[in-house]
Length: 257
Image (cartoon, rainbow, N blue to C red; front, side, top):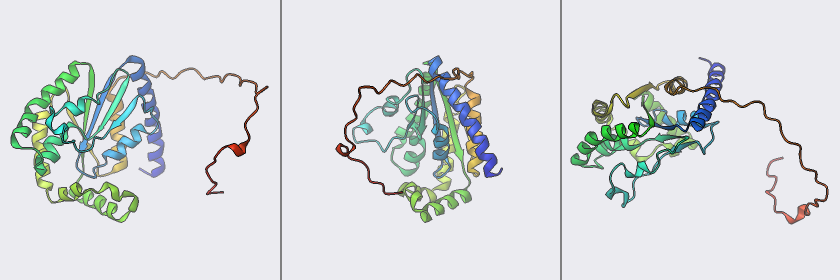
């Protein structure tokens, strides 16, 4: 697929996302989409393309930092529950409660008892969300070892991408097999009928974005609620209004001309 073909198809899909957004708002749906996967698998790129033309009051992204000392003493799912959608909202989790069976488990940030409790309680938690009326969609982005290495090297070389390479990312390179085992165990426990995992092959970023968005659109039946063409009202007459002198305002300098 050429860049021109990719951009054309992406634009079409993004237009459909706008229609889906209006459907979610009009019908009062509650949608949660989870994006998980290995480091540099392309989750962020897909999220950016999904949200690019959407209303942030309807579609918002949740990317939580590491838990605070207080949050570590709470019920594990508590900090995520606070970000669940109200009616007419769609929430995209850029990583989610699945930190526990992946990063926390592999890097030793949780103990075995906490890990096993997650495996027992997570399916019930998600069934409860679905029963409450939430549409829950879970994506796992799968990237090969070779492609991940290429992306890591790219982040090292390009200054505007360097922030993406965290110390945790570097450590994950040495634990490829452990992360693979953790993912397999997680799927065995949490790939449930009410909220299955959908795997996105992401070695090709552009195709991964198109495939994921196309699949997302197929998961929520919607109709086109595009309003009739809008007619702008006539502007109010400026008669009687005296604008203050321009010299009374502080302008941003013209750095570029």
